[in-house]
Length: 429
Ligand SMILES: *Cc1c(COP(=O)(O)O)cnc(C)c1O
Image (cartoon, rainbow, N blue to C red; front, side, top):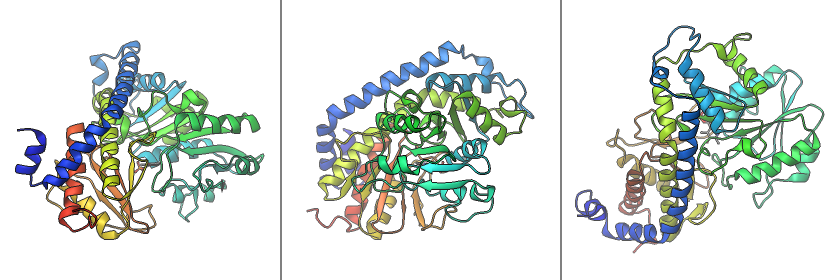
């Protein structure tokens, strides 16, 4: 019995949905081979970084308290620095999310009177309260840091003239979001970000260029530092944690800027010297080792979802054959019912909590109720099979992840099948 038969006979998937998936999968084979190629390259990069830093059994020992001389933590940070072509890295379970890591990098490097610039439109929702776009106690704005934003042009390109005009003597740091976040826009490739950084540096070389690298790690062969970024920041419960990291964030880049972030995360004067691994270094390191493979599976699932939902008459971004710089697949569902149905299907396909029904809720940091389907081993982990959507027009669902390609594929198929059964695929015979 093959997997498609199992899906139909044992799991109740409609045979027409299975046929649609099989056809899409066959068409996408050449693109899957490209994703495999990138994964092979990145796997070797990770392997070499671990070997060069003489990763050893002793590094997985548990450390507690202040965490002075935590060799495992220091070695993992050296591995990250090597991998990302950075001078230094801060990789810590004490950073509880991507937003926290970004907050640490921003507060560490911005001072009273400085200005922060986003040249790629509105940043990720949770950063609105960090910056003070949305009033919040403790925001950068409250600390005297102003903010300026240059929106993308209607075709999704960077408004280079607008960016040049927006740079003032007070501009201290530019934040470039690689992934689309909850926006219907393309994600920026490493090369595109490189052009933008070059342009900004040509205006003033001392502006710190930071990339919000969430969801982007290991999608391409190069990372932002190789295109001139000074800092790159991300979450360990997304790509680089490989699904095994139970919590954490990372900041990589120029030593001076990473050290400033460390002084903010821990204590001025102590910085990177403190912070215990708490026994998590093994999971963080092993997850990093698996990450290139996990990311390639997630990319294939994103392509499969794009192709199937294009065939079902939905708008997708990127298109199945589009270039990718992150693992997120946006699908324009057009109605709340379709979003809910898709998310129910993803939840049904989960290994954990497959029996629960996801509901939208007022998550802190977001301005509309958000639905999150994630039957994940690690709470909120979106390198695991997951889908989320702000419940507002035009009802776009953001799909990503999958710890293994076979599981991610089953998730996409079950989402489409659930929509068929809920009557949310009106155009389908
Ligand atoms: C996920 C994400 C973040 C951070 O979100 P957390 O949930 O706090 O980890 C920031 N920026 C982008 C583009 C993201 O996708």
